[in-house]
Length: 32
Image 1 (spheres, rainbow, N blue to C red):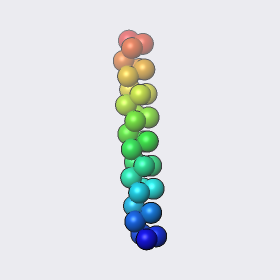
Image 2 (spheres, rainbow, N blue to C red):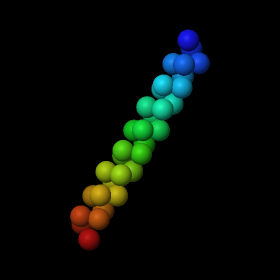
Image 3 (cartoon, rainbow, N blue to C red):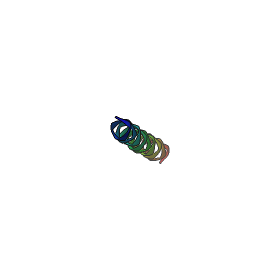
Image 4 (cartoon, rainbow, N blue to C red):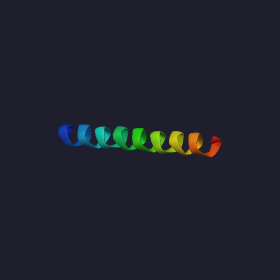
């Protein structure tokens, strides 16, 4: 069960990073 929990946490972290990068990129594009 611990391995499954670690996989879920890792997936959430990756998803958050991707969302943050996409949000940051969209902000930069709007400024130009």
